[in-house]
Image (cartoon, rainbow, N blue to C red; front, side):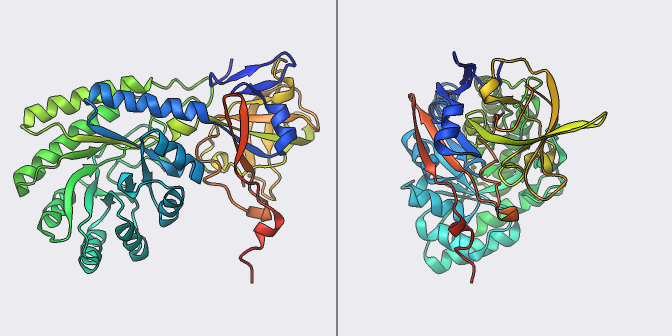
Length: 432
């Protein structure tokens, strides 16, 4: 009935999340409200870690892609679960450090890292820096020399694999702002340059072919291409790359149309390719890093709103407006991302209406979905949008001077605030 197994309907006919009544949570904490199921987040981490144990003999690291949802409590959870984290900004590094996350288990990404960010990463001992381009490689070598450091790096490589996903979120093909292309020879050139540098410790390669991918074949092809690249690097430079970061991009179930593959299936089939090609090329099986983000937190989150108005335009559409919108979930405006929705206080009733869910921002494109099946909505109803744990809070904004919602974690039948709701004073805190 629902896109995630932590959702159900109780005896009141209300939607429950992690065993708690979402209507009660909306009353207690206010709306709009992000909810995150901590137990499910931990379970997903453990599934990925188990797959590393099973298919790579434990020689790997699960690095949560924290751009999906970055806050101090998430980093605490990752630390306690023995996961690494993938960071993409000085802000994410700082947040993780402030939560006590060990820098050695961080990976630092980005296509245009500033000197400030690189110096910060060097100062705090970030474990791996994924270098995106030759300009950055030279900059990092200089900064490392000035700081008396020798950072461990991986080169971000574009394997040229089309992941058959939305064009905005495909990152493995040659026409991408990320990484070195194999086809042009620049990826091999980067390895040659890095191998010569005195203040750089080149240990591996990284690729990421896209996001929300349901097909295993592109991942298998990317792994094959990357092992071929590692062979070429060895032949050209004599350097044996001992680490391979295969990125993330594993799809999740947003609606009934989505059919994600079990994580273990991804991991087993990709490991088969890695081991086969390593043996074929006479290379050691590399230490494997993966960077799941959406698949760890996406299904573990929902957002609840209060319905304000209903507007019926005969023979056109019916609008249901809520007390949030693109400022707390911009993904429909950006990608036309589909979500499942349910009226939390009428969850036991049939979805006998089709509506456009509108936000309260002063933008005609401020929508959370069109042609959405829903129970008949009226003012005061509580609307839940499902599978919003990833890229909702992290992409939220104060557009129209709206305040960002709180995040409430649920675990073992209890709830607690992990990110406070913004106040009016927060909105003007930096104004002069």
